[in-house]
Structures are given as structure tokens and as C-alpha cells.
Length: 218
Image 1 (cartoon, rainbow, N blue to C red):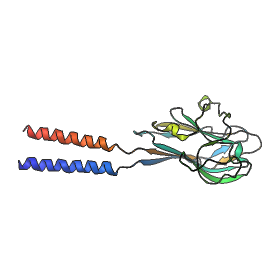
Image 2: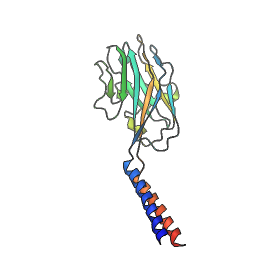
Image 3: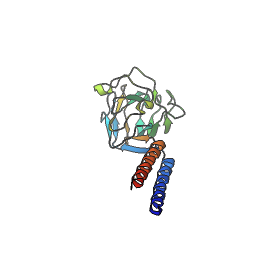
Image 4: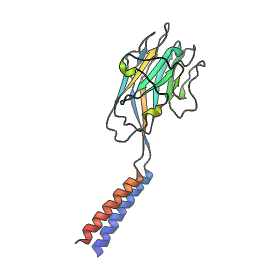
């Protein structure tokens, strides 16, 4: 009986550790980047077209995703359109027709559904966080076919999908006379949900029950 009680105590301690782990677990954000520059050619597709990031090894779906564009410079920002296509074919226009005629230099942008506002169609673009903003919904980024519409307006279109695979960023200049650059490429901030506490609790209870049955059968 002494050995039985000692074993039971050890099992209960292990279960407490499982529960503590479940309680303390939180959603985690992983950052994936492609820092290679993207040249925004005058009146046409950027180079490269698309820029890509490949993700592998994730086992939980996307809870939230933000997109970072680094080092944006352009002499006529409203010419520029940016499209993100996920591994499953979902598509969101991050920006198109924003920023008016005011040149920008080395601006860093985060596109986030939870940002307080989108970009302006006329005011100068400054570094910060913005909702995806598309002032020209009839623009198309195709060819290639992967970049053809229709396009979503929110990054939540990627929620509950696995992030594994190739993410493609298509950038076009839609009007003649100006050019620019994303000097440090782009990145993805991928948030995945916490492990389910009830699942971990259930697993712990199954382990305890199995051990008790085994000991009682001796």
C-alpha cells in the first residue's frame, strides 16, 4: 500500500505539471523574413515578381497574421500596388493607390487587420501599422495566374489555415513615370493559438487512470 500511495503521489505531481503548463501557455508569434530588396520598376511588375517566403513545420493553424514591408521608397506612391498570396491561394491587396503624390523614402509598414486605420489616398505615407488599403479594386496583378483576382480586403482570410508552403508578394507599378524600392524586402508575423488546456487535462487524466488500473491489477 505504501508503494501504491507513493506512485499515486508521483502521478498527481505529474498531472499538476501538465495543468500548470496548460495554464501558462500562450499564443506565440513567429517571424519569417525575406530581406532581399525588391525593385519597383516603372509601369510594370517589380523585380523579383513575386518575392517569396517559404514556411514549413508548423502544426497549428494561423490565429493572426501581419505583413511587414521594409524600406519603402517611391517618387509617386499611389502608383504602387502590393498583393499577398498565401499557400492555399487566398489573396489580399495590402495597398494600392495610397499615399498620393508625395515621395517617400525608407518607410517601414506593418499591415494588420487590428490597426486603428488604413492608409490615406492623399496624405504622405509614414512608418506605422495600417489596415490593408485598396483604393483601386479593379486593378489586377496578373499575369501570372496566381496573382489574378478576386482579392480579399482583410488578412483574416488566412486565419485558421496552416501557414506551411510558399507565400508570394506581388508588387506592381500601375502608372508610367516613377519607380522605387523596398530596400529590405518583407516579412510575415504569424501568430498561432495556445495548446488547448482541456486537451492537456484530458491527456493527464487518461495517464492517471491507466496507471491506477495497472497498479490495482497487481
